[in-house]
Length: 349
Image 1 (tube, rainbow, N blue to C red):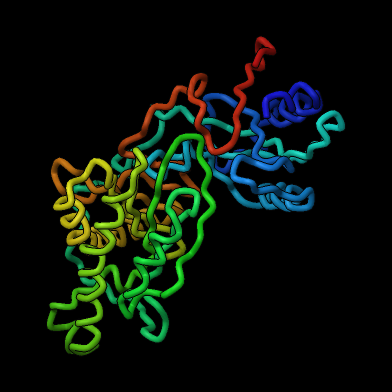
Image 2: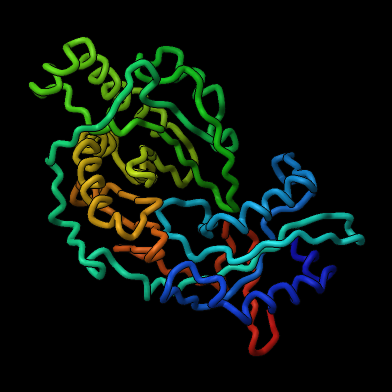
């Protein structure tokens, strides 16, 4: 893609026009950018996986970006906090290559200056993991669904897995399109918050829903600990994440295990404790609700065998992270979009 930069000098003008007035693009007061980048997000070329976007699709994407905050991720890895966000997007055309492409201007953060949960007045060690919550539920619909990228996991693996799926799991998986420059497999379980916080052994659960529903919940978690663990342990990629994803108060929540570094026993332990983690996440979201959180990431700490919040994305405070990863922006090549760091002062790329 890099030759497209030289074919369309108007991209440089677009970059300069946006970055000379960053205040107009700030998401919240006090949002600061360490640097700005200009990236090619997508083109009408056929990519390495044989996929191709139409010109109209690019214009639709650019329009959507202008209306909705798009966070810039590293390697589509959910454990890495967003390294910035898009400020503007525009479609360009190069007659020489006969290609349309979306150029985006991004504001990149300094990870060392991101606030922690403690900085905003939240002590994550005292989150009430055992607080009972009354979660709405509808047992007439599936409570869980497998989601995967066919570029990362062979579809036959998922087909075999779902042949004898538990009653609470949807028969058909959801496909995810995630393309990264480095090998990464994310195996996702989309799960209702009701199921994630259910305790089928409690007296209250049995009195409210009965033994039949309790048995279905037990069957589901047994399936996770046996069938799902077997699948993720047999995946061959160097980076494999097992992610349980749910939603609470319009905030997406993901509980992630780095399964490639985990023993089978640690994976099972993480699944057994994910109920406590879900209750902890509910408490945390309630405490930062005034910041309008849209995404919250928990990670299973393999050493202490506990679920801990890693970072949150909010509309009013941006990125909050207890474990910010430092990314060398000038050397790292694995962004989810092809980023070129532009130095305005020296007019060099």
